[in-house]
Length: 121
Image (cartoon, rainbow, N blue to C red; front, side, top):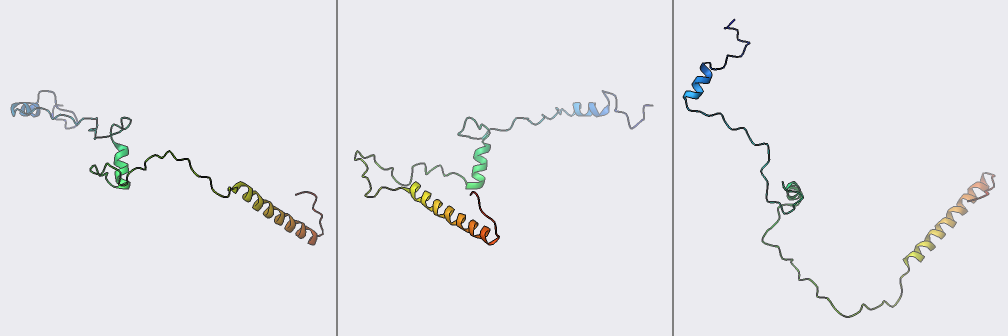
């Protein structure tokens, strides 16, 4: 039946003719490729990393590219040794040994109160 609303109209019907007679062309479909931003990183051509950094840290100031403080000039003088050599590893080992001895003594004392012998710690 030609008047069935569920079927698509045949090509060349009045709807197609009216669009052609009005001089309209079909609208261009939107592009699937995103517009690239000005990214400084060649591995991030879309600038997603820059956009996220700007979101969390605020936008970069292009005008302040020079560091605020001058860089230190290199010296030819050798560093001076300190008067007392530091030995943080030795002091840490001593502290650990003292703590371990104190813990072992507490275990032996608790075992003695319970009437048990401590064979090995």
